[in-house]
Image 1 (cartoon, rainbow, N blue to C red):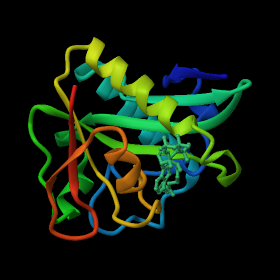
Image 2: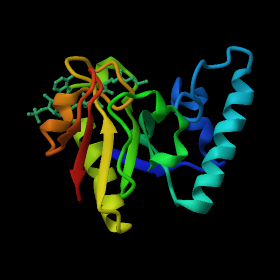
Image 3: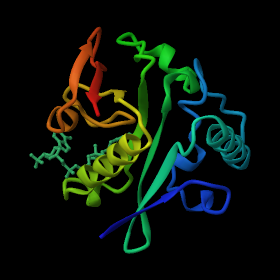
Image 4: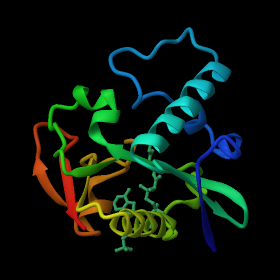
Amino acid sequence: MLTFEKIGAHNISRVPEPCRFCLYWQTCGELSPKISKDEMENVKLKWFGELEETFGNCAKIAFVNSVPLGFMQYAPAKYFPRINDYASGPPSRDAVFLACLYIISKDHRGKGYGKIMLKNLLEDLKGRGFGAVETFARVDSENNPSGPLNFYLKHGFKVVRQKDDFPLIRLKL
Ligand SMILES: CC(C)(COP(=O)(O)OP(=O)(O)OC[C@H]1O[C@@H](n2cnc3c(N)ncnc32)[C@H](O)[C@@H]1OP(=O)(O)O)[C@@H](O)C(=O)NCCC(=O)NCCS
């Protein structure tokens, strides 16, 4: 059975790697190789704190039998500078942008967990009054922060704009 925890200072150490140290969405251009993992974790924790104040919860850990299995990160697009690198953008102002939906171990993929994670997120955002979710999915490959296009098409997302292999897709809640 999957359980979910919202991220805070008390549980950031349980965010599975590499997500715990990943500042891909919080930056744009080249990722700085000079920052240590500890510094990255601190930057990310500070970012989570700021988002909590302005947007509310913006990330969750998914656990299976109390072991971290996956990670989800989401917020309005203005909080993710990396979005500017994507040709199919920009995301719509009314949408929450799903930056990351990731099951860390390949052994855990293809077993229905991703579907449960997405459902949990969509219900959460709907309950908070948001009207739409958008992401950049990837055509013909799951090697992408939020995963492959087909996963989302199966869940009712529609393509908004496609300039390359990372179309902007949207689900109305
Ligand atoms: C994308 C991801 C979250 C999907 O989760 P999952 O548990 O594997 O997916 P599910 O088993 O819940 O599948 C749900 C549906 O989507 C489909 N699906 C899942 N992965 C798919 C893929 N790679 N290509 C096509 N369809 C896919 C399934 O066939 C299933 O359809 P069904 O309901 O008709 O059976 C997961 O595979 C993942 O994290 N992949 C790695 C992504 C990655 O490398 N990210 C980089 C992060 S920096």
